[in-house]
Image 1: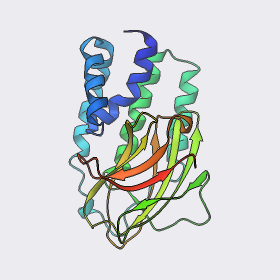
Image 2: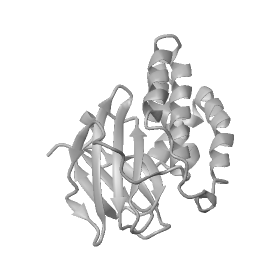
Image 3: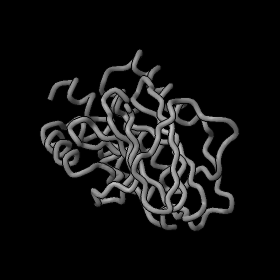
Image 4: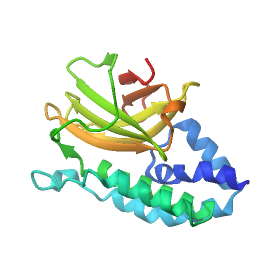
Amino acid sequence: MTSEHCRQTRPLLGMYALGHLDGRETVALRAHLDGCPDCRSELHQLAPVAAALSEADPDRLAEPPPLPPPTLPDTIFGALDRERGRQRYRRIGLVAAAAVIAVGLVTAGFLLRGATAGDPPGQAVAFTALSPGVEASARVENRAWGTGISLDVTGLPQGGTYNVWLQRPDGSRMNAGSFIAGGDRTMSMQLAVALPMSDATTLGISAPGNDHVLLQAPLHP
């Protein structure tokens, strides 16, 4: 496999280890892994971290749960940008995949609750499709490593797990992460996905393993 192909594939390894890739992405990644021992080795290194996330139990968190710093995405991907100037592509892919795992920690239960003071940076998007009783707002920001997403959701059935994703023009989706709904409590979160805004048409939310769109917002009205 070419280094360019590996560079595009390695940011997906963390999401694959967490089980957050859709069927089409999973098939493509497995085909690449079959012929790329370097990527298989990196996936082997990430697997124990992903397995540890399954032990996280949000119900055991104290009230309120600990809040990850709002600068977490910038810190992670800032380090990635600096690494890009010093290391070869193989090392960059590993740092990017580790960043996906770090965002997965937020997914595992360290979710932000309540709105923060002031508006987050980025472009506000309007949800044109909402499930009954659900309210949501979001902002997206184009970053050097892809797209940052600030998302607030209220009204999804408490305890349910939901995926957040960006959709490409061809209809395929790239997962940005997942969260556990809080019912009438607003769930506020910061997510990241290694897909530029220019390559995405839609921000959406659905239940894992279900293509039915619960919430949808166009990125380029």
